Amino acid sequence: MHYTFDILNCMLFVAIVFIIRAQKWQFAKRRRALYGLVAIDEIYLVGALYFAFSWLASTGLLTMEPFFEFDTLYFVTLSVTLGFMMLYFADICMGRVRHPLLIFPIPIVMAIIFLFVNPATGCMFNYDGGEYHRGPLLILNYIVWFSYMGAMVVMVYRARISLGAKTFFGLLLFFAYEFGLQIYQFFVVDFYIGGVAFTTGLLYLVISPLFLEPGHDELTGLFNQRGFLNTVPELLRFDTETEYCMVAVDINNFRNVNERFVFQTGNNVLSYVGKYLNRLYPDTDTLARFSADKFYICCPRDKVVLSLPNIPIEECAPEVREPYLISLHQGIYPIEDRNADVSLLCDRATFALQQVKGDYQRTYAFFDANAQERLRYRSHILQEMRNALEHRKFSVFLQPIMDIQTGTITAAEALIRWEDDTYGMISPADFIPLFEDNGFISELDLFVCREVCEHVARWKNEGRNVVPVSVNVSRADLLTPGFLDDFSSTVTAYGVSSEDIRMEITESVLVRSEEIKRQLESVQRMGYKILMDDFGSGYSNFNTFATMPVDILKADMGFMANLEHSERGQSVFSSIVEMAHRLSIPIVAEGVETKDQVESLRAMGIRFVQGYYYSRPVPAAEFATMFDQNATMLDQNA
Image (tube, rainbow, N blue to C red; front, side, top):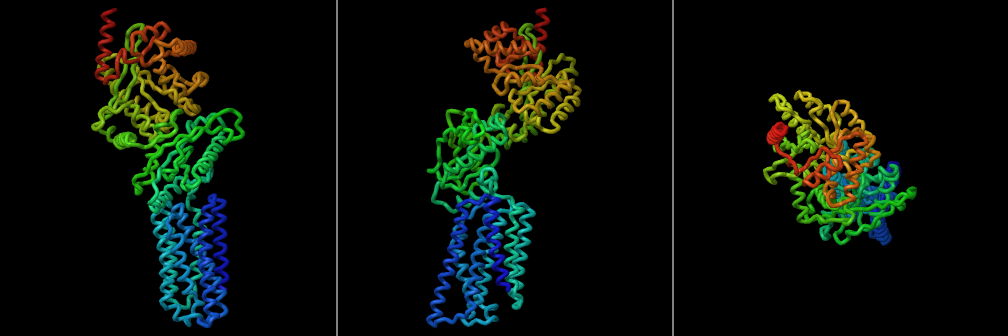
């Protein structure tokens, strides 16, 4: 009776495996073929052996009882199901089965040994029950069983981080239960619980996907980050003859797709790109979407597709009726160290991608020696940022804003500088984008605020006149909970007025501006004036700007380059000046480097300027001296 129960449970297990993989995890065709191959392999082997023994029995060389046929059916189900169980469990833990020993030789050896230790073999080799339960063939049976369970334990241990602590220890308890049950059965001859133990294990593996994170992305059907990071090491470890590349792919300016069209259109684009990459790399299983529009591919070096044509958006989303092209960019890293962490390989491909991101002329870049040095430089910045802040390697410089009508310093902008022991003076253009990405920018901007407040407070205590100083605030700052409260508390703690400190934002902050708008309105209610830096750089339109709470405009430095030699540049800049005047918003011209530029600005009605023509950014002490000299000169001229 227990045979029938075990057969039904095993068949149910196989059916559930296919249902889960096909519907929940989008079971791939190649995976179905792999499982089918194992099943065919085992059934063929068992059938061949069965007919061989049947022929031997017909010749009189072996004696075979009638019930051997039924026990063979039981064995076939047991054998095939155990092979499925092993492959399935490896798939749960590592995403893909890459070890060849888990596909062919071990199931074959297992089938042979299980056939010889099947109770029906007692009829052929004249074993009685006692000899079977204590014989050497049973020992081989347990060796195979414990080998499979031991392999599962190894896989669970290797995947312990991605599985999580609760799942990891839960699986260890299950293995302990299985080991204990089998050992107990070995010593208690009459306690036939092998089928119970086996089907209990199958049931546990069936329900395990309910609390294990799936390895595939639901939107595209590709690997997700977990599945990719678990699969690539197996590929690199066991396919040592092939040279591989890690390829990072993203959609150029995908954020604009989400903003310009509905959210579902963005999803349709991502889904289409996933299928498109599958078509470009038909022989590669290791494709993944990590998040948003970040795709990764690990493929043979000679299979990398360098030129990716633009995709009309109507191919991705038929509901869109306007012309728009989806362009893909790639970063390619030829893998040299196969034992390197896969995350590191992805980082290097991503770093190569950043070289062409936003570039409409080049669509791919390789990670080469120059990229290696840039990556080393970038890694140094990220590793040393906190140490530099703690040891005051960062310093605040001030650049004056001049009133060209009176020649007075009317304000200043605080600019951060980093003097590094290894690379010397590190440009803000190198470290600020990195800090905006990892969130460190908020700590750095609060440091700038403290330094400015300290200088202003000291100058006031010394009886000096002070001018408003603007502190740069990033988009990440405005979206960080509590940042504005910390900023305001810092100003109050130093006894400085909100009239002495200003906040400066870039025009790019206005993208997706509703939340930012609420934050800026809160800033104005606190009494701070808001300056918009780089106005005219192209992120926003005038309609958006008209609704934003901004007190002072700072014109993009790009206009200064065209001011002297381009009539069109002068016309555009004049339009911005006229608009600002109509809205009664003061405007500051940045990047002023020549006397001719000053005179052109004066003729346009610009009163406030900032640039190297008057002064570079200087340390706070030097700025104080400059301010005193400026005041003294004005007094003498008066």
